[in-house]
Image (tube, rainbow, N blue to C red; front, top):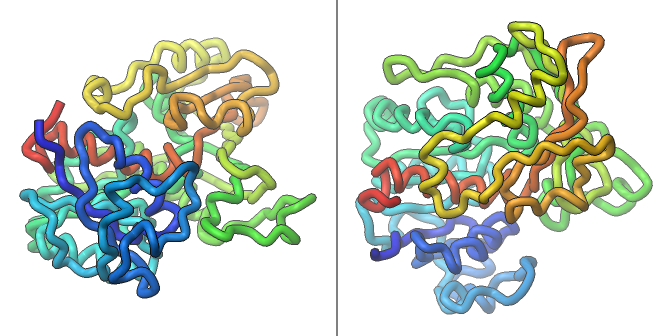
Length: 357
């Protein structure tokens, strides 16, 4: 089976580098084009990039010449596929231009997450939301399309909420996150700000945590997005941890349930059948821990090659109904790896690459 040629927009940044690393040995995708900063344009990627990932720059990517970000990349395919790791301002400018030029844009950026006709995807949560793509194409008169990944902190909290929504209904949630410094990108947070400290503010994160779950847990009806009727209150905190976002969540259920019933629902959960066809899906997607002191970022963030959710401290809540703590790896499941899973989903569903799996 021939691999699907893809490009990476913003390939010289930290998320772009992670895309390059993950795509190097992917069974379905092959990088054929990279775009980057003005400083690197026209140079071999291996010479221009300040490589921050473990190991060496993948040989194939290292030899590619960095190109300017513009929708004229030579990427075979109908549609041609690009992964976007662009900064916010550039993403707002370029991602619609790529979609208008016929590209499938799989973005990790925040710009279009809440746009009603843009699917906000996690394959384990809402794989059917790709049915928004025809609406998006029709409303924008685009031959291409954009699909988005949610915020890394939203990702850590969302799977138990989905499971409880299906089992009991969910009326409200209070989410408090403890977010790793890698979520701020490179060079990240000043050591004088984060060492011996917790910063109770991350610009825009509270709003993302309050809005994105409503879309992820909503429905598509007659080709249009209907948000979930759930009230969410959120507070995001930056903590001195390198990788791994921890979410402490209390939930008001539609139907009262005990902690034991909540744990049973988590343990009984099965992912959508399509997930078994995605090559990056780990053997164990949801790990429920019984220990009172788990999950922990250092011990649990790499579960399932950084793609699994680890959930623990599932208890009765004296204010709402149940509470839990959930952890995901913010730069893998919450960023590049999550977007890669979305692209695999698009391939299986036939939106790119002529179908796979």
